[in-house]
Length: 189
Image (tube, rainbow, N blue to C red; front, side):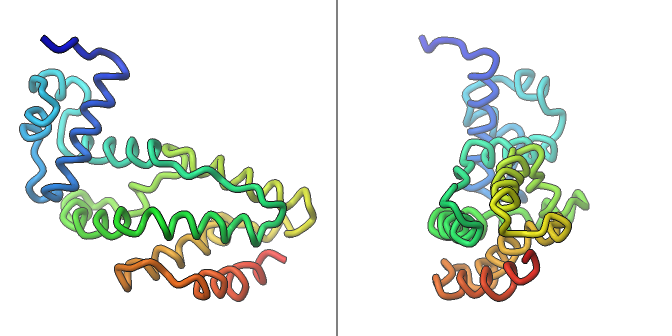
């Protein structure tokens, strides 16, 4: 008989099962019952934690983003840090970004939440990681801190995501360099 899961191990198993169900079936066919079956548990175990599928979907996405967080590089230059991070996203996240955009269209329509609501950088720890990257650039004198608004900090990554979603493919390296060199860096220097 398998050992009974509890606490963090149980929550991880439930969220992993929810993520697998979401990526396999999409939001339109995502059900709490299917997650219960996939996780090998009972409905009360799931419903004690998430009372509805929208809350469970959001929790599964945040969990997956936390689990798959990319280490923030420290190359000694802002340009190379941002390019290295964009290249890592480009080489490992194209499928994730594409699938989530397609599978979650119904979720956004039903709940009124936007894609940005699911990429909550505070919940996933991304804000702290990017803040550290930009703090190092400030310390090195590479950027003017007053120019680093939240929108400008996210700009290269927003443009990368836009490129991925318009082509459903990895972005060529020369395009990544163009985003950094012509769109982003001139705004922060």
